[in-house]
Length: 491
Image (cartoon, rainbow, N blue to C red; front, side):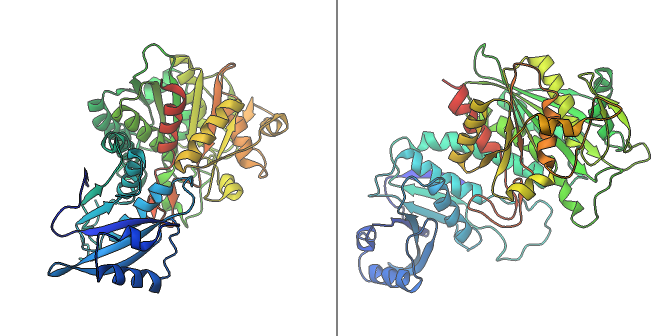
């Protein structure tokens, strides 16, 4: 989509959007239209009960020249500090116009006194909400095809273009994550996940490294290898390195990348299993964040690690009751082969710590259904051994709309994963399932490393549209990680 900023409205055909604060009068905001356009717009707003709530729209067709123009009054609400205010406005406009037949949208911010950053946030919301993945559609009706491809912002504050360039990089990362999460598992599996990241990231200056299954086996990654051994698609460990911060110790981001999860021998119910193509949402978020950081040339050192495997019920698959030895040397009794994400994370975290000696490590995973029972689809869960780190992640999520809720940990929960024949078992009782999963992962975190685990099982896919996405892949985690790095690890 083409984005531009201008000092005045262009000529020609376009839809016109006029944002309105809760305390604005329509007469003031529509002063440039003249009569009878003002009266038509005011009547349309009244008949549509337009009360200026954030993202609400009243639509009218007003006379202009020898024709008519589509006018959209869009609400800003009354709370200028409301989180994601401007993104919601931009997203609402795109949702209304994307397949409307309109090709160009002019958003007139004149007279509002908004900063360039606010204008860029409106554009970001509009562009993010426009994302679709029609690769596999061979037939689209005329009314289903996207038409909007040009947005012009009039009256934006100083610095709008540079602010948009930064957010454009974030949108690139967000789009890449959504692409990965949306792809079916016959197309996206460990090897092709690596290929896509390599082709997109190396031109940005991100260094790519890959361990294959034989190399991982030689390193003693029995937990990760065990998960993938039932599939004809061999596992991979992908590393992505962005060096933008001089000699600073890197922040390490680790993502669970189960490209399809049948549950293995502990097989899942058939109904809804197709959704398990997005069980690599944590790895997808890490990959997207790396693109966002490199795209805006973040002044930070960040390592992304993706533990990639496919969990299948082959005759060679690991069985409930098997004992595997992780790279850390700790042994694990596999009680349930559907609790596989924590296994791949354990080995990936061990390897990342030995390789990069990080001070801070954050993992992201679509880990437990228990997390969805606890928090629904409104928050991801954050577990941490460091209060400051948990607070910084929560604040970053709140700022960008990727909300997190701190969950408890402690010795009583840790005791629930003790095994009678190994160092630990990979599941505890049904109660507190997301907590015992976090306790399992913590056993692989080295002393002195500040660690947080984000269980995002309820957040990477949505069955209903939001202001930044339509139904489907949300891209959750990309903006959160980008903001977390920007706020805490860049000068």
